Amino acid sequence: MNMPIPHLRMAATLVGLLTIPATLHADTTFAVVGAMSGSFTKIGNEFKQGARGAVEHINGSGGVLGKRLSFIVRDDECDPAKAIEIAEEIVQKKIPFVMGHLCSDASIAASGIYEKAGTIQISPSSTNPKYTERGLKYVFRTTGRDDMQGFVIAEHIVRNFKTKRLGIVFERTDYSKGVASVTKEFLNKGGIQELFYLEAPKKPYDFSPLFQQIKTHKVNVLLFPGLPGPVMELARQIKAAGIKIRLIGSDSFSGITITKENRRDFDGIQFSFPPDPADDRRNKAITKRYKNEGYKPEAFTFYTYGAVQVWAQAVKKAGTMNAEAVSTALRSRKFKTVLGEISFDQKGDISNPGFVMYYFNKGKRYYLD
Figure 1 (tube, one colour):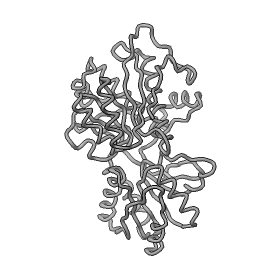
Figure 2 (figure 1 turned 90 degrees about the vertical axis):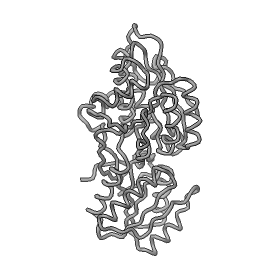
Figure 3 (figure 1 turned 135 degrees about the vertical axis):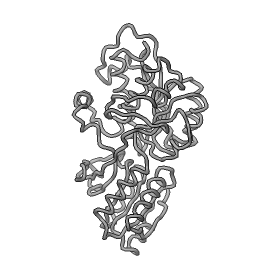
Figure 4 (figure 1 turned 30 degrees about the horizontal axis):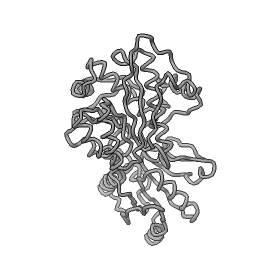
């Protein structure tokens, strides 16, 4: 699905927009890229809403280098091949900045194309270390890495489930394998040895062989850092089978689409994610504005918003949209954003990549004490 977002002056039917100063000239367009449809619809909407909110604020404050910002949206379906196609389209359009991609596999696949073309890429969600470990100049992220996330998950399991019998399941993606492997490493160092380490089934997600393994090994804690689609199906099948197990996941669980029909499937599920900026009192006005528009901001809404903010501030600092100059600016100063004051190291990783643990109850998520 290739879905363009209209310029903000055309979007008054969606939101009450800030007045754009008359002195602003023609638009500068950036791209918002990630999985936007199917089981990723919730996260895709957070991407779009975060970008919209940031653009609205920036345009209302004078734009960037005298120009309005606008953006297009592209759906890569978390498919590396699709991500490469989209990246090639974007560089042909000479778009200076990509807010994305969502999945680590897609971000890594597309990053080489952006690097060669001189396009800044900032992902709000790709956590695999390989994304920033290859010496690329133009890749950044506003979220933490798997090695930090894996440590937090492992510490939580060691502290709270040391006597429990643990199994680990992963998908064949850079994201899922990355979180599973680093968590496993920390768990083993902490004295917990998993009873199985298995690859999850592919569509149509028949988890009955996994359930047999759970019964055979008497597993009662299951770690599965899966993407929203298989996670939702696993939770449904666990509920239907009447299996009593504690399911623990990672940041992708925040993208689960919860409905009246499935909300009880997730009761008690625990997962890692950065602290939600919606809870930061400094974002009270932004959160209120979104809610007045009929949208509840959370999770990747803010990490997207922050990514757009830091790029715009770096452009202003550099006085140009040239990738070399913007990259230098991104690595050389601190930025005030909805994520707080942040900076980037020489690899492009965010300076304060915290993760905490959450749990679901009756369709809502709460912090674990």
